[in-house]
Length: 58
Image 1 (tube, rainbow, N blue to C red):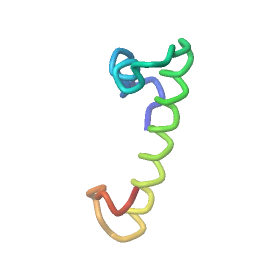
Image 2 (cartoon, rainbow, N blue to C red; image 1 turned 90 degrees about the vertical axis):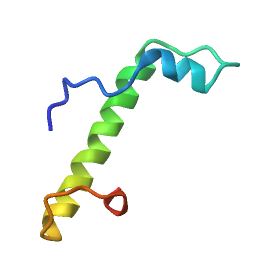
Image 3 (tube, rainbow, N blue to C red; image 1 turned 180 degrees about the horizontal axis):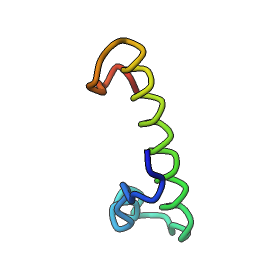
Image 4 (cartoon, helix red, strand yellow; image 1 turned 180 degrees about the vertical axis):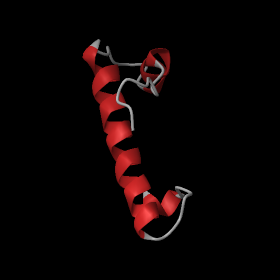
């Protein structure tokens, strides 16, 4: 999976933690983590003979 895809909306991070300041690098770190989770989930789906990532793969 391409790591240059932005899956995280920065304004939504601030909305999720309204009583906190959010450092600029949080969005990039969170994006990398989500991509890693999706990569692992897609591998798990493939190992189970599926082409569809399901919630249980997460």
